[in-house]
Amino acid sequence: MQVPAAIFLLQWARVSQVVQQKRFDTLYSATPALVCGGINAPAMLFSALAPLFDRVDHPVPTLFGFTLDYVFFLIGIVILWYVVGSVLDQRQSARREPRLVWTMSKLVLLGGPLALLGALFFYVSLQGFLTPWRWNNYSGNIVQSVLFLLWSFVLIGVPAIKVTQRLRQNTSPTPDLTLRSFELDRGGGALTVCEAFATLRSH
Image (cartoon, rainbow, N blue to C red; front, side, top):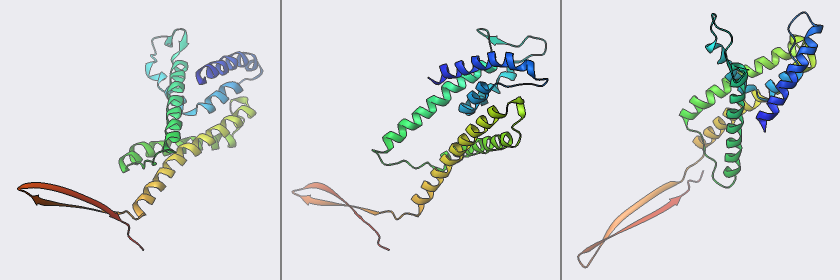
């Protein structure tokens, strides 16, 4: 669903840009393209891979007639919304099962980059609000800045929630589990009985 919507917005932007660019002396970016970029903000990171394949002595590389930044962006959209769907499914199952707390390594390796990306998007959104005249499109810049701001809240908020859960787990009282094992000797045979019980500390 997201990929067809993105293709529609980008094609709409291409047509609009051809018409509107004639009115400006500087670069113009159409509102559909800015909105598509805001909705799929994390996928725009994949577009940054396209210049790695550029060569000065060769024309701009394409794939099936599309430029690589366009292709990588669509691939990023597929990966992005697959991950989002998986996370939402896990949240649904977490309502029926005990919520898992992230380990310290996961907080560092996953939560850290997410928070940094959220901080980057917050900076980009702030720049958009401060300079809405960029790309000769005030409304498009404002809408994209709002979408980047929402993404920054999500990307910063998820690690923050996981850190809070981790701290609560470390400070909450845990039951003392005592396992006692003893052998009963009956008629020359050994019978092992394991008795487990839990007692809660009272404060």
